[in-house]
Amino acid sequence: MQVGQVLIPEAIAAQAAASGVRSELAAAGLLADSGQFPKLVLDVLRVDQVSRGIHVQAGQPRAAGMSIALTVRGRVFQADDQEPRFDSGDVRRSVQLSGDSDPRTDSAAYDVALRSAAEHAGRAVARMALGIPEPNDETP
Image (cartoon, rainbow, N blue to C red):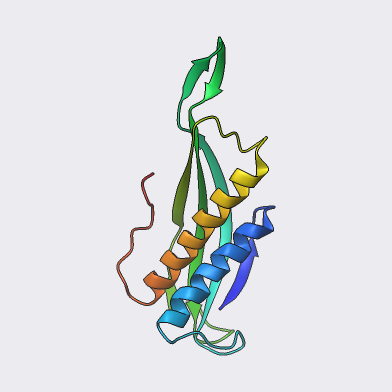
């Protein structure tokens, strides 16, 4: 397993997604040295933040919640110079923050939510590569 492209600035997301992949591969007894083939390459593509609604508190608008979603892609290669034998397509997993949590001001809550979404996404890619049915997009 190796991390390929990381197109987002949050390194914790790539680490958590890779951890999710490794956990699933280890559980299946297929976690091997990163230099061996077949090799699963994980690309971390994007993070989305979506408002879950707005409410009024003390006359001011407040966030009612936030969804943090991470999109990844997994490809399995048999050799360095070959096309992938498996491509998961984009796989998206999300986590909800409730109440007045605002990821721009509460970085701890944001980091926890991003890590959780990333680990779920990594696990989903690994399960897909193992042939276990898994939806590409998890509806929040």
